[in-house]
Image (cartoon, rainbow, N blue to C red; front, side):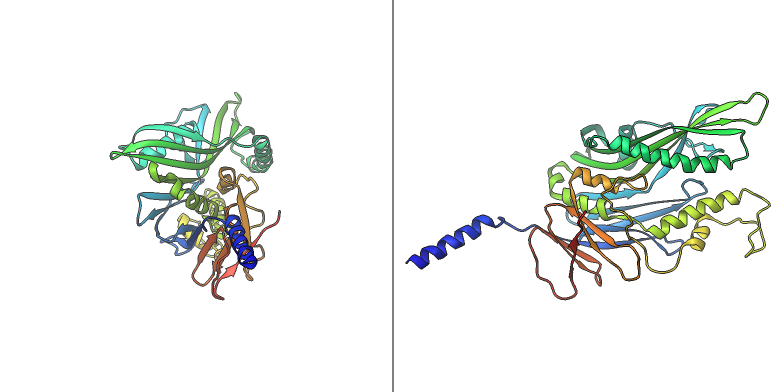
Length: 389
C-alpha cells in the first residue's frame, strides 16, 4: 500500500510540474524569385497552410531599381502576412517645388513629402483596401530607452560615408549633409472592410537626412532637400477575433523572412552602374559600347552564381539601419537558434519567441518545427542549438 501511495504521489508531482499542453507548429521555406532573371531575391518563412504570391518591379529609379513584395495568405482563415522592400523618396525643403511622384534630378528618384509614419501606413491600407473605413490606431510599441541615441549614432556613421560620395559630385560647389533622423515603428490599426472588423500590425523603420546644395554661380544659390527612406515594411492583417491566434506565426514570418544577401549586394552594384551610365564617355570594355543596360540586366551581371545566401555576420537581435526584422524582438523577446551551411562562412539563424525552446530543421524539405516541448523525429531532422549571447 505504501508503494502505491508513493507511486501516486510521484505521478501527481509529474502532472503538476508538466505543462498542460505542448505548442508545436510547422513552417516552410518559400523561395521568392524574380521572373525576369530567374534568381532568388528573398525567402519567406510561412506556416504550413499558407500560400505565397510575390512580385518584383524593375524601374529606372536610381534609388529603387528593384522593388519587391510578397504576400502569404492562409488557406483556411482570412489572414495574411506581407513584406514590402525599402523605398526611397526626396522631399524638397527649399528650392523648386516638386509634386509627389515627380522625378528629382539630384537624387534621381521620385519626390514625396515626408509624412508621419501613421499617415504612411494609412496610405498603405487604402492602397490595398480602398473601401476600408474608420482607420484608427489601436496600439504602438514604445522603443526601449536609449534606442534612439544608439540608432542616431549609426546614422552619423552613415553620414560620413555619404559625405565621401557628395564630395565626388562635381555639379555643385558644396554639399552639406545634416540633421539625421530615425523612427522605428511598430503599430496596430483597426478598420472596417466589407462588414468585418480587421486588425493590421505594421513593423517598419524610417530614416532621413537633409542635403544642402550650394550652386556653382556668383549668387551661391542654395537649395535644401530631405532624403528619406522606408527601410522595409512587414504587415499582419487578420479579422480582429483571430488576432491572437496568428500573432506568433507573424513574428516567425517577420523575424525570418528576409532578402537574399547576394541580391542586396547585386542591387548596390546596379545603383553604382546606373550612375556610371550618366557619363557618356564611359565605355563597357566587354561590349565596346556605352552602357545602356536595363536594371534587370545589370542585376543579372552582378548576381553571383551559387547558393542563395542568408547567413549572418551579426545577430538579427542587434538593432541596425539596414533591415527592420530586429523590431520583432521588441514586440516579443526572441531566442536565436543557429546552424551552419558548410559552403558559407557565416552561420545561419532561426528566430522564435522565447517560449519555444525547441527548434528542428529538415534541410531536404526546407521545413522547420518549433515547440515548447521536445519532439522525436527521424534522422532527416536536425535539432538546432540555442545561441548564447
